[in-house]
Image 1 (cartoon, rainbow, N blue to C red):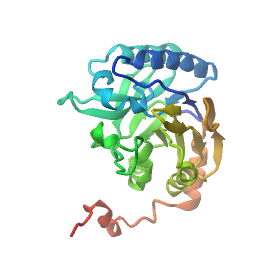
Image 2: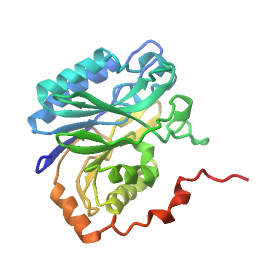
Image 3: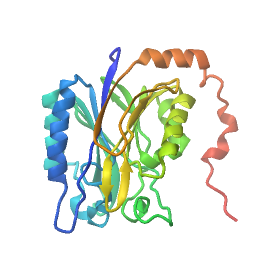
Length: 289
């Protein structure tokens, strides 16, 4: 792992699919331009927001405009080429088809390396379903939940990736850190009305795990939902070291320093004082009468 990892969060608007409009070509073209730009910043990792490629609110049209990763379709091939040509790792939010059951659709984040190609795919494990929501949290109508919480090994460290609502569940971040994640990356579509929540929970997840935590959100209005952006990077001590603007496109560039993690954990000893035998109820199913 390098002494420092330069991360670029691309806080960008994303087109939404319609019955007769596949948004992926337009979103990909914009992404490729942004990848070239962050490569000029000598970034090691470029991160895009939740469902950036497919359009977060493409919703009922996702069965037509989801991405095939095995074998890779033309959009994935283009991303593989961009990572290779620009010598940068990519995390790209996209809807993906299931393997054994192609009708299943997953809210996913693709991790692509400049030499390794497609390293892996994280599928959002906590799919929101708020009955009072008009759009942003009716995801369960369109996505199946993922069943794994992986950590991906790369030359720029072990990366724990998860997606938006997953941050509400502290177990996700903790599992990835216990699996050896050097830093965590959340790809998001952060919705207006939850700004204060994001302000506090990012710091909480970083501090309770003594880990670097980065969040990259799409921004703009999709089908009447306002996605506010606010992408940022928080260090293991809970300090916001870089943050994006609200309500407009932006780039957030920050250097992740593993020495900060070592210092925080050496001071706090969060993991050596854990008592896992006391935590069994966390893994039990929720009791119902």
